[in-house]
Every structure is written in C-alpha cells, then in structure tokens.
Length: 69
Ligand code: SF4
Ligand code: SF4
Image (cartoon, rainbow, N blue to C red):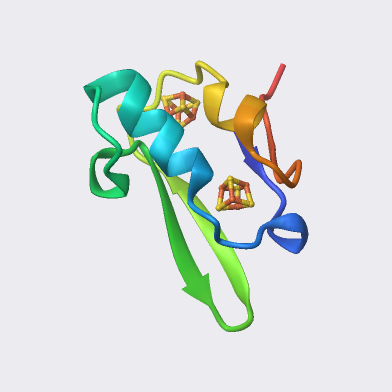
C-alpha cells in the first residue's frame, strides 16, 4: 500500500474501514493501518497483518492511499 502524506488529513476513515472489515468493530487500535502525526503531516504505517485488500484506499475521502500493483 502507498500513502501520500501530502493528501492525508488524519481523518482515520482508513483505520475505521480496516477494523470494521477485519474485526467487525470501528476501532482504529485494531486496524492494520496506523496513522502517526509527524510534524504537520500524517504518516501511515501498515502492520504485518495487512493483506493489501485495498479497502482503506477505496474509502479514503482524500485519495491519500493507493494499492500497489
Ligand atoms: S482515510 Fe485517507 S485522509 Fe483519512 S487518515 Fe486515512 S489516508 Fe489519511
Ligand atoms: S489494505 Fe486492507 S488490511 Fe491493509 S490496512 Fe488497508 S483495509 Fe486494512
């Protein structure tokens, strides 16, 4: 997965979508994508459990995530 920090607002939609689809709970702490504040930007980290399903990218409202080919 590719994260474009310039477009990211830190809204956490990606983490909610991931935790909902993999754990049936809206809880960013269970998500396989983690957002970290890095100065004025947000940085995304994917845990080893990320299966690259691409759902987080599909629902990111700002086009800040892309699935790698
Ligand atoms: S859904 Fe998109 S804009 Fe929102 S935190 Fe995730 S990557 Fe950033
Ligand atoms: S690609 Fe799928 S498993 Fe990986 S962080 Fe996004 S929603 Fe979660």
